[in-house]
Image (cartoon, rainbow, N blue to C red; front, side):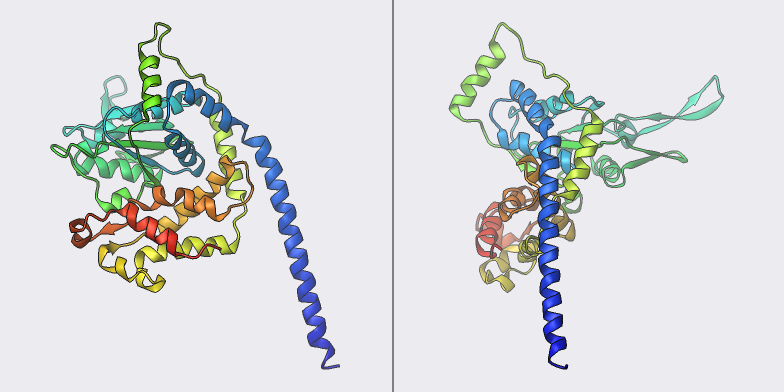
Length: 353
């Protein structure tokens, strides 16, 4: 009898594993079918944005990832790369409110959040809401405003609410901040501190368009037919529903471990055989980086019409999630080593499941 119990236990365990695997497979098939139906709006948004934005497919895709992940995005690039235009166009494809705030050195937090004004008819102070109360907020050249204004914006991004006087107001849903900054000109700018940059889920660095794309851009802008206008093709309710589906995308425990290993390699590279990176990294990604990697990988899988995450999804979003979360030492700057090089080294070293 003593010999039968272990055997029976093993059989039960094996049966249980088979049952669990079968259930997971059924769940993945179900979420796959759901995504095939509910992700059609992705093509509609891309089609409308491609009317206006030529080239920059990565930027368009990253904007969609931020939208589906309920995270904010920071676009960095020299002037004239359609950063503002892309954000404006995305907002116009969705039936939602849009607000553009040009950040300047004389901007005050009240100009952003709102303030209390005196109502002569009621003989009392009432709240006057600022431009932050919109579904899409474009913070143009965010690094041109002083720290007090940046802090006010980033608090609203994190808490999804604003306090004016004694009253607290929830920001509308969906709420997405899309900020731009120019990395070239540093005079009269207030660079975002690392702790505040960390609030952005993604940081996307834009490059110049290709020659063929630039020819199309010229043709696009000087044509007699006028500049094309995108149509509203999606409702806010569709976006909120899609976010719920993104959360259902299956992520295996091995993928979770892969994400943790990537982030830990930015903190303790020596543990992963990357001793040469140890003197180059001042600090690595926070737990917020791990959460962002997982969330963005799920959103990327959704865009690719898949109900499960694969390692390539994680690798595809790793640079945009990690590049603003790794601090470099003076030694790294002296050797002209940037975060892109460090992330590439880590991705090539950490074992893929």
